[in-house]
Length: 326
Ligand SMILES: NC(=O)c1ccc[n+]([C@@H]2O[C@H](COP(=O)([O-])OP(=O)(O)OC[C@H]3O[C@@H](n4cnc5c(N)ncnc54)[C@H](OP(=O)(O)O)[C@@H]3O)[C@@H](O)[C@H]2O)c1
Image (cartoon, rainbow, N blue to C red; front, side, top):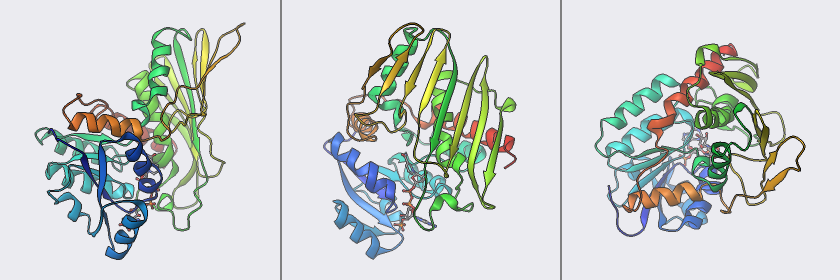
C-alpha cells in the first residue's frame, strides 16, 4: 500500500487517548490529517470533530472503515472492541493502528493476527508507541554497547489513578483491569529487551475491587533474566523502570510516554551517574505516526508490526493474570 500526499486518518471512537495523545502526535509528526472521527452518536462525533480539529464527525464506526477517503484507521475504543474494528478496517484495505492491548486474551489476539496474515499487504500496529521513540533507541544502543554488562533484570512499574466516572478500565465486559491497561507495558518492554518469556513459570498476585484487578505485581522469567512488574489504579502516576545488569543499571523516569524532561540515567559502580534527556518529540505518539506515514508513503519498510510482538505480549499477560488467580 503506497499513498501519495497526506495520510488521511479515520479515528474510531471519540476517545480520551485520541484527543490527548493521538491528535497532538499527528500534528507534530506532519504528513497526515485527521479526516474523520466516528462515534456511536452523530452529535457527539460532530462536536468532538469540531472541538479537536478533525474534518468530519460521523455516526457508526463502519462509516470510517468503509470510507474510500480514509487511508489509515486508529482504533481507540474499549479493549473488547479492538478485534472487531481492527479486522474490519484491515479487510477494507486500511492500515491500522489499534490501541493496546490489541485484543482481550491470547486466543483473540491469535485470531486477529491470523486474519491480518490472510490479507495481502495488511499493515497492523498495536499502539505501543515507545519502540519508535528516540529514547528507546538510545536504551537499546546502550544495552548493545554493554553499558551495564549483561542485562539480567527489568524492574518496571506503571501506576496511575483513573478518575473519570464510569471509566472503561473498571469494566470487565469491556476488557478492563490494570494488567490489561498498564501491566501490558512492562511486559511489552520485556519482550523488546529479553525476547521470549517463560510464561509457564510466571508468578504474581493481585488485588481486585470485586470486578477487575486494581493492583497487581508479577515475576516473569526470560531464561536467566526476569521481569518484575507492578501496576495498578491505586497509586499516583509513576512508570519508573530500571534495567539491571552485571556491571551497572539504567534508570528511566518514563520508558513508555516520555517527554523532553524525562531522563535516562546510567549508573555504574564507583562512577558518577550519567543522565541524558534522549526524548526529542513533545508528544509520545509522534515517532510512531511519523513512521507509519513514511511506510504508507513508500519511504520506509514497516517496523514493530503487531505480528512480531502482540501475541507474545498477550500470552505473557494471560500467564501473569492466571498466576494472580484472575
Ligand atoms: N497507547 C496509549 O498510550 C493509551 C493510553 C490510554 C488508553 N489507551 C487505550 O485506548 C483505548 C481507549 O482508552 P480511553 O482512555 O481513551 O477511553 P475512553 O476515553 O473511554 O474512550 C473510549 C471510546 O470508545 C467508545 N466506546 C464504544 N463503546 C463504548 C462503551 N461501551 N463504553 C465506553 N466507550 C465506548 C466511545 O466513543 P464513542 O461514544 O464516540 O463511540 C469512547 O469515547 C483503550 O483500549 C486503552 O487501553 C492507550
